[in-house]
Length: 151
Image (cartoon, rainbow, N blue to C red; front, top):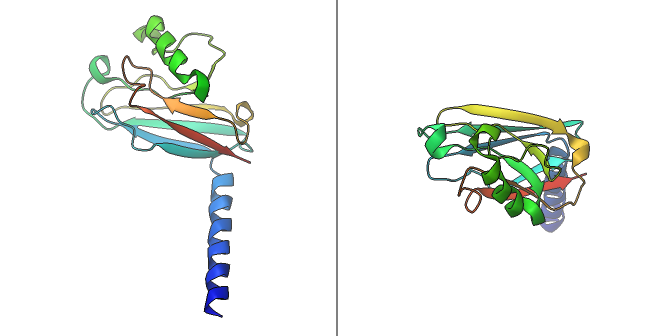
């Protein structure tokens, strides 16, 4: 009897976790002065009409020394997008203008600032291989994570 109750409880917990994930249309990320995001994985639903990425820079350093952004791209191209961002420069938030590989990108922020971007959920496919990362020079090596897309 105890085993049946335990299994039922675990099954219900799993269902409620999936229910939460299927309605998750906003990702909140914080970046600090140590070149770190506070999360390594984020989950969103492909069924969201729009997805919002909210970035808070919890550090104190200025944008010119320790700027952060969040860029979303397919994982196999994230490093190339970050490298090409260097050529785009600070005026372009270190994101190549019109780059079809970029699914979404926030603006660059410095310590104490916040930014966000919204994009159509239809740009992501459930089960796809996506990453989020910072394109400020030298940051993508440490500031990157996995974007998990569920149905």
